[in-house]
Amino acid sequence: MAKRIDQAVVIDVESTCWAAPPPEGQESEIIEIGVCMLDVDSGEPGGRQSILVAPERSTVSEFCTALTTLTQEQVTGGVPFADACRLLKRTYLAKDRVWASWGDYDRRQFERQCQTRGIGYPFGPSHLNVKTLFATVFALPREIGMDAALQHVGLLLEGTHHRGVDDAANIARLLSMILLRARAG
Image (cartoon, rainbow, N blue to C red):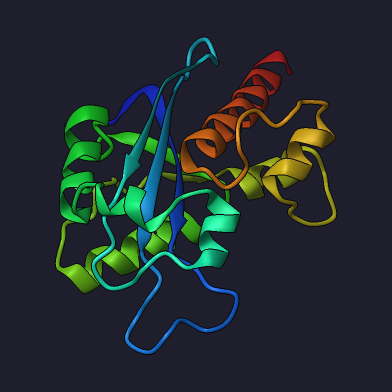
């Protein structure tokens, strides 16, 4: 099947986290998958979704709630990770489209969690690391965080930082700016 290049699937994940190493027997796992579709032709960010994922091997710490606003109660009501991966493939055609995230953390977290759970990877091989792309396009001496990138180009952070759905939308805005800048020459 030919790669679909009509839209990019912009992803941002939030995972269980702690101020120190994880408690005995727990591991970092995805608890939210933020999705924002980006129309490649127009550069317009489109449909957004927050997919809450029920953790199987960890609990949400107070540190994690303070960072993401997500609570154990919220994510316990989420879908199993396997269902979230199926949703990405079916609803967003993630296997057939380029997908993007800020840095490699999201890609590596998906790869690791899919491998440890024996679940098929929901994406194809075309991943855009928007963090590296941004630093390259703007000739920065090093990569910077998403919020700093927004400031660098004069955009305000929309929504809540470290909520997957809001961060995915902000990343889509930055990717849009890069695409439109490239076309303008």
